[in-house]
Length: 361
Image 1 (tube, rainbow, N blue to C red):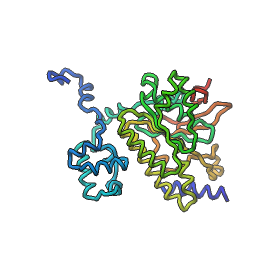
Image 2: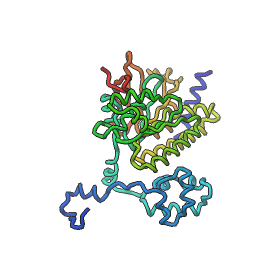
Image 3: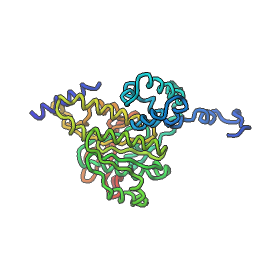
Image 4: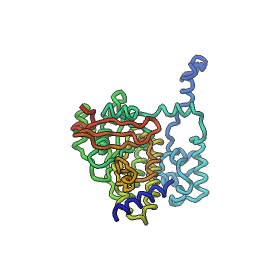
Protein backbone atom coordinates (compact mmCIF):
# COMPACT_ATOMS: atom_id res chain seq x y z
CA UNK A 1 0.00 0.00 0.00
CA UNK A 2 2.85 2.35 0.93
CA UNK A 3 4.73 1.70 -2.31
CA UNK A 4 1.55 2.24 -4.32
CA UNK A 5 0.95 5.57 -2.57
CA UNK A 6 4.57 6.60 -3.22
CA UNK A 7 4.12 5.80 -6.91
CA UNK A 8 0.92 7.84 -7.13
CA UNK A 9 2.56 10.81 -5.38
CA UNK A 10 5.60 10.53 -7.67
CA UNK A 11 3.39 10.49 -10.76
CA UNK A 12 1.24 13.38 -9.59
CA UNK A 13 4.27 15.43 -8.55
CA UNK A 14 5.61 15.21 -12.09
CA UNK A 15 2.24 15.88 -13.64
CA UNK A 16 1.44 19.04 -11.66
CA UNK A 17 4.41 21.09 -12.99
CA UNK A 18 5.01 21.06 -16.43
CA UNK A 19 37.92 58.63 -17.04
CA UNK A 20 39.73 61.72 -18.45
CA UNK A 21 38.38 64.58 -20.63
CA UNK A 22 41.24 64.00 -23.12
CA UNK A 23 40.36 60.39 -23.41
CA UNK A 24 40.18 59.21 -27.03
CA UNK A 25 38.07 56.17 -27.84
CA UNK A 26 40.13 55.58 -30.98
CA UNK A 27 43.18 54.76 -28.85
CA UNK A 28 41.42 51.87 -27.14
CA UNK A 29 41.11 48.33 -28.57
CA UNK A 30 37.51 47.45 -29.47
CA UNK A 31 37.20 44.71 -26.84
CA UNK A 32 38.29 47.08 -24.07
CA UNK A 33 36.09 49.91 -25.39
CA UNK A 34 33.11 47.57 -25.43
CA UNK A 35 33.61 46.50 -21.85
CA UNK A 36 33.93 50.14 -20.74
CA UNK A 37 30.72 51.14 -22.50
CA UNK A 38 28.59 48.09 -21.70
CA UNK A 39 29.47 47.66 -18.03
CA UNK A 40 26.89 45.62 -16.12
CA UNK A 41 24.29 47.83 -14.41
CA UNK A 42 24.72 48.38 -10.70
CA UNK A 43 21.94 47.69 -8.24
CA UNK A 44 19.53 50.59 -7.96
CA UNK A 45 17.83 50.88 -4.57
CA UNK A 46 14.10 51.60 -4.39
CA UNK A 47 14.82 54.89 -2.58
CA UNK A 48 15.81 56.32 -5.97
CA UNK A 49 12.20 55.93 -7.09
CA UNK A 50 11.39 59.06 -5.04
CA UNK A 51 13.00 61.13 -7.81
CA UNK A 52 10.43 59.68 -10.21
CA UNK A 53 7.20 60.37 -8.35
CA UNK A 54 6.99 57.48 -5.89
CA UNK A 55 6.34 58.73 -2.34
CA UNK A 56 8.38 57.72 0.71
CA UNK A 57 5.49 55.85 2.35
CA UNK A 58 5.12 53.52 -0.64
CA UNK A 59 8.88 52.92 -0.73
CA UNK A 60 8.74 51.93 2.94
CA UNK A 61 5.97 49.46 2.14
CA UNK A 62 8.07 47.99 -0.67
CA UNK A 63 11.00 47.46 1.68
CA UNK A 64 8.76 45.80 4.26
CA UNK A 65 7.63 43.39 1.55
CA UNK A 66 11.25 42.54 0.72
CA UNK A 67 11.36 44.66 -2.45
CA UNK A 68 14.55 46.65 -1.88
CA UNK A 69 15.88 47.25 -5.40
CA UNK A 70 14.48 48.56 -8.67
CA UNK A 71 15.55 45.31 -10.32
CA UNK A 72 13.34 43.43 -7.88
CA UNK A 73 10.39 45.65 -8.83
CA UNK A 74 10.93 44.71 -12.46
CA UNK A 75 11.16 41.02 -11.63
CA UNK A 76 7.85 40.95 -9.79
CA UNK A 77 4.49 40.70 -11.51
CA UNK A 78 1.86 43.42 -11.15
CA UNK A 79 -0.37 40.85 -9.47
CA UNK A 80 2.24 40.22 -6.77
CA UNK A 81 2.88 43.94 -6.21
CA UNK A 82 -0.86 44.57 -5.87
CA UNK A 83 -0.87 42.23 -2.87
CA UNK A 84 1.22 44.78 -0.94
CA UNK A 85 -1.12 46.68 1.37
CA UNK A 86 -2.12 50.06 -0.07
CA UNK A 87 -0.99 49.28 -3.64
CA UNK A 88 -3.66 49.67 -6.31
CA UNK A 89 -3.30 48.69 -9.98
CA UNK A 90 -2.81 52.36 -10.93
CA UNK A 91 -0.10 52.76 -8.29
CA UNK A 92 1.64 49.59 -9.47
CA UNK A 93 1.54 50.80 -13.09
CA UNK A 94 3.17 54.08 -11.99
CA UNK A 95 5.76 52.11 -10.02
CA UNK A 96 6.60 49.94 -13.01
CA UNK A 97 7.00 53.00 -15.25
CA UNK A 98 9.33 54.67 -12.73
CA UNK A 99 11.40 51.48 -12.43
CA UNK A 100 11.76 51.24 -16.22
CA UNK A 101 13.28 54.75 -16.27
CA UNK A 102 15.97 53.75 -13.76
CA UNK A 103 16.89 50.30 -15.03
CA UNK A 104 16.30 48.66 -18.39
CA UNK A 105 14.90 45.15 -18.56
CA UNK A 106 14.73 44.79 -22.33
CA UNK A 107 16.71 43.01 -25.03
CA UNK A 108 20.51 43.23 -25.16
CA UNK A 109 22.96 41.69 -27.61
CA UNK A 110 24.73 38.43 -26.93
CA UNK A 111 27.98 40.36 -26.61
CA UNK A 112 26.49 42.63 -23.96
CA UNK A 113 25.19 39.60 -22.13
CA UNK A 114 28.65 38.00 -22.20
CA UNK A 115 30.03 41.15 -20.54
CA UNK A 116 27.39 40.91 -17.81
CA UNK A 117 28.31 37.26 -17.24
CA UNK A 118 31.84 38.39 -16.36
CA UNK A 119 30.41 39.25 -12.93
CA UNK A 120 29.92 35.55 -12.21
CA UNK A 121 32.24 34.22 -9.51
CA UNK A 122 33.11 30.60 -8.80
CA UNK A 123 33.40 29.31 -5.25
CA UNK A 124 35.43 26.16 -4.66
CA UNK A 125 33.92 23.17 -2.89
CA UNK A 126 37.22 22.33 -1.20
CA UNK A 127 37.87 19.24 -3.33
CA UNK A 128 39.75 19.64 -6.64
CA UNK A 129 38.13 16.65 -8.33
CA UNK A 130 34.67 17.84 -7.40
CA UNK A 131 35.53 21.37 -8.59
CA UNK A 132 36.71 20.02 -11.95
CA UNK A 133 33.47 18.08 -12.28
CA UNK A 134 31.31 21.22 -12.06
CA UNK A 135 33.55 23.68 -13.88
CA UNK A 136 35.67 25.00 -11.02
CA UNK A 137 33.09 25.19 -8.23
CA UNK A 138 29.59 26.52 -7.67
CA UNK A 139 28.67 29.68 -9.57
CA UNK A 140 27.11 32.90 -8.38
CA UNK A 141 23.94 34.02 -10.16
CA UNK A 142 22.84 30.39 -10.18
CA UNK A 143 21.22 27.71 -8.05
CA UNK A 144 23.21 24.57 -7.30
CA UNK A 145 21.24 21.68 -5.87
CA UNK A 146 22.74 18.63 -4.19
CA UNK A 147 20.48 15.68 -3.44
CA UNK A 148 21.13 12.27 -1.99
CA UNK A 149 20.39 10.10 1.00
CA UNK A 150 21.75 10.72 4.49
CA UNK A 151 25.52 10.71 5.14
CA UNK A 152 26.44 11.63 1.57
CA UNK A 153 27.90 15.03 2.54
CA UNK A 154 25.20 17.48 1.46
CA UNK A 155 25.36 19.49 4.69
CA UNK A 156 29.17 19.19 4.88
CA UNK A 157 29.49 20.76 1.43
CA UNK A 158 27.30 23.61 2.68
CA UNK A 159 29.50 24.16 5.73
CA UNK A 160 32.68 24.05 3.61
CA UNK A 161 31.25 26.55 1.13
CA UNK A 162 30.40 28.95 3.98
CA UNK A 163 34.08 29.14 4.91
CA UNK A 164 35.56 29.11 1.39
CA UNK A 165 33.18 31.90 0.31
CA UNK A 166 35.11 34.16 2.71
CA UNK A 167 38.50 33.43 1.11
CA UNK A 168 40.12 35.71 -1.50
CA UNK A 169 39.17 35.03 -5.11
CA UNK A 170 42.74 33.87 -5.80
CA UNK A 171 42.18 31.03 -3.33
CA UNK A 172 38.91 29.91 -4.89
CA UNK A 173 36.71 32.00 -2.63
CA UNK A 174 34.20 34.76 -3.09
CA UNK A 175 35.76 37.36 -0.77
CA UNK A 176 32.41 37.81 0.96
CA UNK A 177 30.01 36.68 3.64
CA UNK A 178 27.57 33.78 3.70
CA UNK A 179 24.01 33.21 4.88
CA UNK A 180 22.66 29.87 6.05
CA UNK A 181 18.99 28.95 6.45
CA UNK A 182 18.78 25.78 8.51
CA UNK A 183 15.53 23.84 8.20
CA UNK A 184 16.68 20.57 9.77
CA UNK A 185 18.76 21.72 12.74
CA UNK A 186 22.03 20.56 11.17
CA UNK A 187 24.17 23.74 11.30
CA UNK A 188 27.17 23.16 13.59
CA UNK A 189 29.53 25.97 14.61
CA UNK A 190 32.14 23.37 15.58
CA UNK A 191 32.36 22.23 11.96
CA UNK A 192 32.83 25.83 10.78
CA UNK A 193 35.71 26.22 13.26
CA UNK A 194 37.49 23.06 12.12
CA UNK A 195 37.05 23.95 8.43
CA UNK A 196 38.32 27.51 9.12
CA UNK A 197 41.42 26.05 10.78
CA UNK A 198 42.12 24.04 7.62
CA UNK A 199 42.22 27.22 5.53
CA UNK A 200 44.09 29.31 8.11
CA UNK A 201 41.15 31.55 8.95
CA UNK A 202 40.39 32.81 12.44
CA UNK A 203 37.47 30.63 13.51
CA UNK A 204 35.67 33.39 15.39
CA UNK A 205 35.94 35.70 12.37
CA UNK A 206 34.65 32.93 10.12
CA UNK A 207 31.56 32.49 12.28
CA UNK A 208 31.04 36.26 12.47
CA UNK A 209 30.83 36.32 8.67
CA UNK A 210 28.03 33.76 8.51
CA UNK A 211 24.41 34.71 9.19
CA UNK A 212 22.40 31.74 10.44
CA UNK A 213 18.65 31.38 10.84
CA UNK A 214 16.58 28.38 11.90
CA UNK A 215 13.35 27.93 9.94
CA UNK A 216 10.47 26.06 11.56
CA UNK A 217 7.87 25.90 8.78
CA UNK A 218 7.67 26.61 5.05
CA UNK A 219 6.09 30.05 5.59
CA UNK A 220 8.85 31.01 8.04
CA UNK A 221 11.37 29.78 5.47
CA UNK A 222 9.94 32.16 2.87
CA UNK A 223 9.96 35.03 5.38
CA UNK A 224 13.65 34.40 6.09
CA UNK A 225 14.43 34.42 2.36
CA UNK A 226 12.68 37.79 2.06
CA UNK A 227 14.58 39.07 5.12
CA UNK A 228 17.98 37.97 3.80
CA UNK A 229 17.23 39.57 0.42
CA UNK A 230 16.71 42.88 2.23
CA UNK A 231 20.04 42.34 4.01
CA UNK A 232 21.74 41.67 0.65
CA UNK A 233 20.36 44.99 -0.61
CA UNK A 234 21.57 46.88 2.48
CA UNK A 235 25.08 45.42 2.26
CA UNK A 236 25.64 45.56 -1.50
CA UNK A 237 28.28 43.16 -2.77
CA UNK A 238 29.14 41.87 0.69
CA UNK A 239 27.41 38.50 0.51
CA UNK A 240 28.46 35.79 -1.92
CA UNK A 241 26.62 32.68 -0.74
CA UNK A 242 23.20 31.58 0.45
CA UNK A 243 22.77 28.03 1.74
CA UNK A 244 19.39 26.44 2.41
CA UNK A 245 19.64 23.05 4.10
CA UNK A 246 17.25 21.66 3.08
CA UNK A 247 14.87 23.28 0.63
CA UNK A 248 12.17 20.62 0.83
CA UNK A 249 12.07 19.27 4.40
CA UNK A 250 9.52 21.72 5.81
CA UNK A 251 7.28 21.43 2.75
CA UNK A 252 7.07 17.67 3.27
CA UNK A 253 6.00 18.34 6.84
CA UNK A 254 3.51 21.13 6.16
CA UNK A 255 1.82 19.52 3.17
CA UNK A 256 0.82 15.88 3.33
CA UNK A 257 -1.06 13.57 1.01
CA UNK A 258 -2.23 13.88 -2.56
CA UNK A 259 -4.84 16.48 -1.66
CA UNK A 260 -2.19 19.06 -0.67
CA UNK A 261 0.44 18.13 -3.26
CA UNK A 262 -0.66 20.73 -5.80
CA UNK A 263 -0.56 23.54 -3.23
CA UNK A 264 2.85 22.36 -2.00
CA UNK A 265 4.32 22.44 -5.48
CA UNK A 266 2.92 25.92 -6.15
CA UNK A 267 4.42 27.26 -2.91
CA UNK A 268 7.73 25.54 -3.68
CA UNK A 269 7.72 27.03 -7.17
CA UNK A 270 7.20 30.54 -5.76
CA UNK A 271 10.10 30.08 -3.35
CA UNK A 272 12.45 28.77 -6.04
CA UNK A 273 11.47 31.63 -8.34
CA UNK A 274 12.36 34.09 -5.55
CA UNK A 275 15.72 32.37 -5.03
CA UNK A 276 16.50 32.50 -8.75
CA UNK A 277 15.85 36.25 -8.76
CA UNK A 278 17.94 36.77 -5.61
CA UNK A 279 20.87 34.89 -7.16
CA UNK A 280 20.81 37.08 -10.27
CA UNK A 281 19.93 40.34 -8.53
CA UNK A 282 22.67 40.21 -5.88
CA UNK A 283 25.24 38.01 -7.67
CA UNK A 284 25.24 35.34 -4.98
CA UNK A 285 25.62 31.59 -5.25
CA UNK A 286 22.58 29.71 -3.96
CA UNK A 287 23.31 26.20 -2.68
CA UNK A 288 20.35 23.99 -1.87
CA UNK A 289 20.28 20.53 -0.38
CA UNK A 290 17.43 18.23 -1.27
CA UNK A 291 16.16 14.89 -0.07
CA UNK A 292 15.40 11.74 -2.04
CA UNK A 293 12.47 9.38 -2.13
CA UNK A 294 12.01 5.82 -3.30
CA UNK A 295 10.66 5.34 -6.80
CA UNK A 296 8.57 2.13 -6.66
CA UNK A 297 8.28 1.98 -10.45
CA UNK A 298 12.06 1.92 -10.93
CA UNK A 299 12.23 -1.77 -9.99
CA UNK A 300 10.03 -2.72 -12.90
CA UNK A 301 12.29 -0.90 -15.38
CA UNK A 302 15.53 -2.39 -14.00
CA UNK A 303 16.89 0.95 -12.80
CA UNK A 304 20.05 0.40 -10.75
CA UNK A 305 19.26 3.11 -8.19
CA UNK A 306 15.55 3.38 -7.34
CA UNK A 307 15.90 6.78 -5.59
CA UNK A 308 14.82 10.09 -7.07
CA UNK A 309 14.99 13.71 -5.81
CA UNK A 310 11.93 15.16 -4.08
CA UNK A 311 10.24 18.13 -5.70
CA UNK A 312 9.53 16.76 -9.15
CA UNK A 313 9.95 18.84 -12.29
CA UNK A 314 9.65 22.13 -10.38
CA UNK A 315 12.95 21.47 -8.59
CA UNK A 316 14.51 20.15 -11.81
CA UNK A 317 13.66 23.28 -13.81
CA UNK A 318 14.63 25.75 -11.08
CA UNK A 319 18.09 24.33 -10.34
CA UNK A 320 20.89 25.42 -12.67
CA UNK A 321 23.18 22.54 -11.71
CA UNK A 322 21.99 19.37 -10.00
CA UNK A 323 24.40 17.01 -8.22
CA UNK A 324 23.48 13.49 -7.16
CA UNK A 325 25.54 12.43 -4.14
CA UNK A 326 25.87 8.80 -3.11
CA UNK A 327 28.01 6.64 -0.87
CA UNK A 328 31.05 4.85 -2.27
CA UNK A 329 33.46 2.39 -0.70
CA UNK A 330 34.43 3.12 2.88
CA UNK A 331 34.54 6.87 3.46
CA UNK A 332 34.46 7.67 -0.23
CA UNK A 333 31.51 9.59 -1.67
CA UNK A 334 30.57 10.00 -5.32
CA UNK A 335 29.12 13.13 -6.93
CA UNK A 336 27.42 12.83 -10.29
CA UNK A 337 26.31 15.71 -12.51
CA UNK A 338 22.62 15.02 -12.86
CA UNK A 339 21.85 18.11 -14.92
CA UNK A 340 23.83 21.23 -15.91
CA UNK A 341 23.92 23.73 -18.80
CA UNK A 342 27.71 24.10 -18.43
CA UNK A 343 29.27 20.69 -17.92
CA UNK A 344 28.63 17.16 -19.23
CA UNK A 345 27.29 14.27 -17.19
CA UNK A 346 30.19 12.74 -15.25
CA UNK A 347 31.24 11.56 -11.79
CA UNK A 348 33.94 12.48 -9.27
CA UNK A 349 34.93 11.08 -5.86
CA UNK A 350 35.34 13.14 -2.71
CA UNK A 351 35.60 12.53 1.02
CA UNK A 352 34.49 14.18 4.25
CA UNK A 353 37.25 15.16 6.70
CA UNK A 354 37.59 17.24 9.85
CA UNK A 355 38.46 20.13 7.52
CA UNK A 356 35.37 19.71 5.37
CA UNK A 357 35.15 18.35 1.84
CA UNK A 358 38.46 17.03 0.47
CA UNK A 359 39.82 14.87 -2.34
CA UNK A 360 39.96 11.12 -1.89
CA UNK A 361 43.50 10.19 -0.77
